[in-house]
Length: 322
Length: 315
Image 1 (cartoon, rainbow over the protein chains, first blue to last red):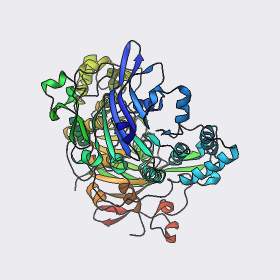
Image 2: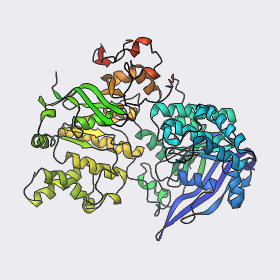
Image 3: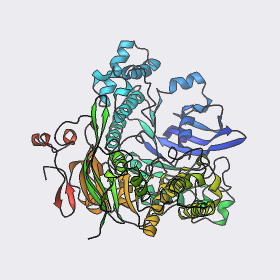
Image 4: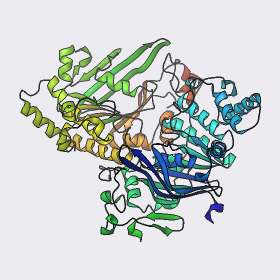
C-alpha cells in the first residue's frame, strides 16, 4: 500500500558481516521510506551503518563477509532484494545512482573524464560512442565544467571539480534515485557550498529523489526535506526536517545537537554524550542507546522500543514517548 | 596589558618545487598572549599547518622571527632548541598516523620524558605516565595497550597526553578534532578547555572548522594562500567580518538550524596555486568586490577598527 506512494520503502532490513567468529550487526531491522522527489538526510556517526544501508539498497554488499539476513527493499513497488544479478545491473546507474565520498579515489585515474561519463551512458543506452561522448560533454557543462576539458584526466582537476565529475556520472542516465554518500566531506567549506548548491539545483531540474548520507546536521538543514537519525544500525528518529530540528525527541538526537559548537552562542563547556558507540558485534540488550542515555528507564535495558508516531510524520524509537 | 608569550614577525616559509617557489607561508605577523587561544583558520593549502610547524621550527622558516618570551628562537642552536621545545609542544591532526603503532600507550607518553631525561628513576617515570593519563582521562588499564586497540577519541587523548607530559606552556593544536565524530569531538574540546584552565596553557588552534574555532578561540586569524587576511577577537570576526574572503567563508558554513535566513556568498572557482602566485591581493581572482587596483600590490594587514586587522585595500 505504502509502496505505490513511496519511491523507496525499506522494511526490516538486517545486514550482518562475519568477521572471525563474530557477527557484526551493521544494520538491524531498519525501516525507511522515501517519497518521489524528496531528499532524505541520513545522519549518524562513523559505524552507524549508513553506508552499509546504501550498499544494501544498491545490492553491493560484499558477500562474503556481508550478508542481507532479512528484509525487503521496495523500489517503485518491486523488491530489489529478489532481483537477479543481471536485473540489478540494469537498475544500478540507470535507476539508482551513487555519488561517493572521496572524489580522489572514486574516479578511474587512467581514463579521461569524458570517457568515464560516456562509459556509464553506453552501459545503459544503445548509442554510438560518439553520441555518448557528446552527451558526456553536455553533462560536464551541466555540472559547470567546460566541455573542452573532457579529455583531461582526474588528476588534472581539483577536489571540487572531481566531485562535479562524480555528479555528472551519477546524473548521466537521469536516475530516479541518487544515493550521495558524504559527497562533500572531503571538500573545503567554500567548495562544499558550491557543490551543495549544484546538487540542489540539479535535483530540482531532474526531479530526482536523493538519500544524502552525512554526519553534518548543518548540511541536512540546508538541503533535505526529511531526516533519519541512525544509531547502531537502526533509525532511532525519522521526521520532517523542520519538526526534527525544532523539536528533536530522541535523547541521542538531542545529544548530537548539543555536541555541535553553536556559532551564535558562547558556552564554556559542550554537552557530550557519555561513552562510545557500542561494539556492533555485541550490541546492548533492549534499546541500543540505553547505556549512554541520560534518561534511561528500567524498561530500556529489557525491551526494544517500538516506532512511535509522536506528531504527524515524526517517528521515534524511545520508551519516553510510549 | 598582558604579556605576549609568543610573537611572530614576518614569518616566511617557501618550498622549492619543480614548478617554482611555493609560497606556503608568506609574511605572517601576530602575537599570542599568555593563556590565550589564537585560532588559525583557512582552507586546505592555505598554509596554516606550515605556519604552526614553522613556529616550532619543525619546518625551518625561510625568514622571519619567532620570539618566545622575548627571545628569538629562530636563532637557537640545536641544544637550545631542544630545551625550548619542552615548553612548546604540538598535537597532530590524525590520531591514527601520528602515534607509533609499535609503541604502547605508556611508551608513547614516556618518550618525551626519556628524550629530555626528566626523571632519573623508572618509578618516577611510571608515576608521571599514570598521572598524565589520569589528567587526560585515559583509563589506567590501557597503559600497555597499543594505539590500534583504541578508538579515535582515546588515541587523540594519547596525543594530548604526550604533548602535556613535559608540562609545556604553549601547544600548537593542528586540527586536533578534525578526524573525530561530533560527540567525541565535543569530549576532546572540553578536555582541551579543562587543561588550559588547569595549567594556564596557551594554544595556537589550527582548524578549517569555523564553528569549532569560534568555540575555542579568544582571537581568530583567517588565512588565505599563505597570508593572514583578517585578525580580530572571535566575536568580532563572526559578528562583523570585514574581509570579503572571511564573509564568504562564514556564509558557507552549514548551520544546523531551520528557519534561519542568511545571505549565502558562493565563491567562484578554487583556491589558486600557491606556486608563483600573481602579484597583488591573493584573493583577487575570487573576490566579489575586486578592482583593477587590487592587482597591483599585496594589501598589508591594517588596523581598521580597534584590534580588528584586515588586509584589504577597499576598506
